[in-house]
Length: 413
Ligand SMILES: Cc1cc2nc3c(=O)[nH]c(=O)nc-3n(C[C@H](O)[C@H](O)[C@H](O)COP(=O)(O)OP(=O)(O)OC[C@H]3O[C@@H](n4cnc5c(N)ncnc54)[C@H](O)[C@@H]3O)c2cc1C
Image 1 (cartoon, rainbow, N blue to C red):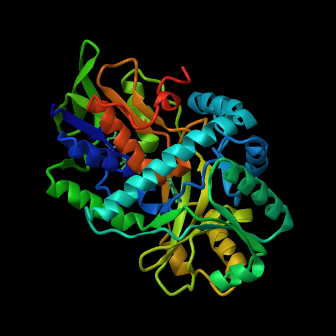
Image 2: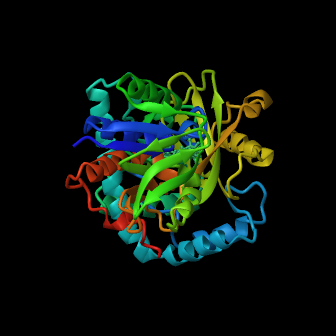
Image 3: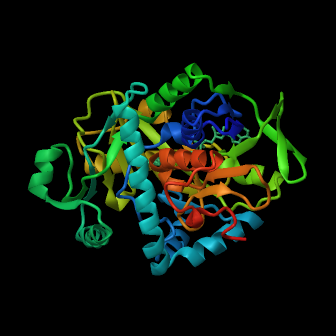
């Protein structure tokens, strides 16, 4: 039965959800407070990464975070501030940073990532619209013995979980990536990469031509309710009726959840990207292990991205951190100097981070027709398609492709 579904948020999660709902024959409206041209879904590194199975909340990350809090150029930063939601989030994050959680969450993340990659590939094979995707794998490059050991342990863990990983020595790495100055790398063969800006534009255009309604520059501010069902989504310009609705508003989702009486533990983790629209000679998507910097050869340019700044919802640019990304690039690619002009075109986005590294996907117990799809953190690009598919299955009263219990909206209540 066709339903009228309203999606709040036109990032990768909202658009993927719209795509799969459309395929199920629903009448879909996407509402976004922006004109859908910036933010996390546009600035990300474009990695579709089955390899990224370790949640952010892993042993050691809290102590590292505390040390880094006092370093303004550090890649991981939690801004000290008095905020009850932040305290609650930190408490649950700290409780999740255990070996046990890593073991548990990594298997779930792996299944979600592979499912999503398969859906991305099917979309490409079916020629839904033209977009860039390459399956060249991902290099985890390191310069020091310390990180060779650290990444080696991670590679062994990943192999045990069923991922395809190869060790690449310095000579072989030089053949693959002549510009890099590194001691070696671990090569995750199943990873793919894309060009997010193009994908987002192509996807929105495709959805529009297929009949999805877009209400842009419209902010959802309230809801109308009858018993435990939402009947209308209220924006600053309209009232939109719905049978079902999906909150896919990224880092803003907890604000919307609050209006619905739903507690959602999500913090914004800011990251930056710098694009180099010139020949860099970089061939492979790479993570510079010591520096937590992502490098991605996209369609027509190279992107450097990094930092994780948990500092609330704001779009301020911290120049010191941007310069650090440029310095990191130079350390691994000595022939590449990022210019002031390139740095001045930096952009940032907010990753919606859950405390345990798993997204929230499903319906809240509090309301009959409210679905949530958020909290994907560093993995939202990779997991977008799988999330959209799962939400569309739920709304279409179908058996879901994956068990949704680990993604429960109410798991921290
Ligand atoms: C530097 C960087 C690099 C990254 N690299 C990768 C990567 O390589 N691979 C990967 O898998 N992930 C990566 N990520 C993470 C990924 O980009 C995010 O997880 C993902 O984009 C989140 O998508 P989203 O749709 O949930 O949120 P967003 O893209 O933030 O979209 C949410 C939308 O909701 C709208 N909205 C909010 N509130 C309202 C409201 N009240 N009314 C109407 N609209 C509203 C916003 O305007 C926004 O457009 C990276 C992130 C960053 C910052």
